[in-house]
Image (cartoon, rainbow, N blue to C red; front, side, top):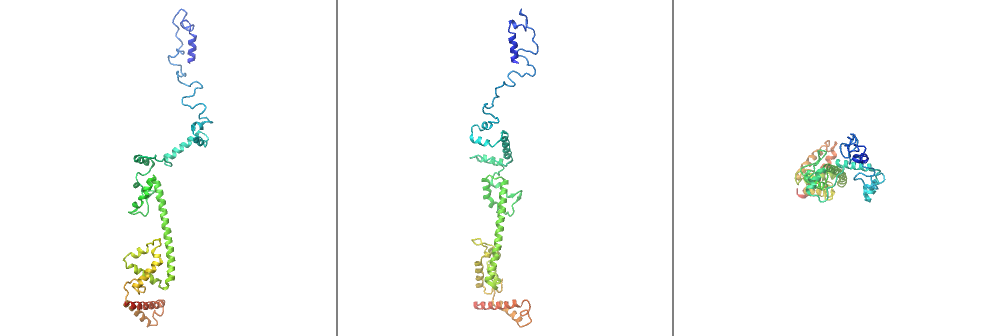
Length: 338
């Protein structure tokens, strides 16, 4: 339009406006057509953008665009983005086009916002900054805030000492900035591991107990039951509940005391020295010669009847062995003045 107005102005540059406007005698020019306002005045016709706006002349790039020799073209977009950084340029070679770069960026944003990825706190962060970062990342504010539960359910086997026992582990979790879900995954795995350790130990204890039982039966022979009774009597002298506590305890190498052959032999021999007839009358810590004599006399009465259970029936052999054991105990007690 400006070109049009300029042409019109040149055409009317005669005396007082030229032939297109007025007379040669200086009469005022006729009113110009409504569609042709003077340059720079009035409202331009519809469809014609105001001066200074609209599409710039061809060959003038919009402000802010990169130089013509390095742009987001199919050939140079990688160099444009890398901006001289060789490492960045090498990484950009992995992408086929700019759209792929954008897609990767969007995926990174999604994973970051969902908590799948998270940024580490800046080095030298203040306590206030760490508190804020932990809150944003879903990390408990303090070690005590980690809950001893998995999926809303408390761990099994907890007692009053559990919080104290787990305190060091909680502090380690906070130092590592674990979220509650990560903490739960850790203690869940730890609980499974502990259960496996307990199961393996129990199975090993059971296997060892079987081996020791067979070894002692071979070593003690017919005195096996009597020696076990002596061991129980010896430990029971210490008080109620001591037997279970001692037998369930462990040696320095982890072997259960109740399956330690040397300890069991020592207890049996010690009780036999204290109570020579203890294996004859198990459970009694004060066997006297009178007690033994009373049972001997009962068996002698049965011996006088050839049809009694001392001589006949399923208990005959047992009664005869019992009589011989009582005689041995009687001799031991007499030798000790019992």
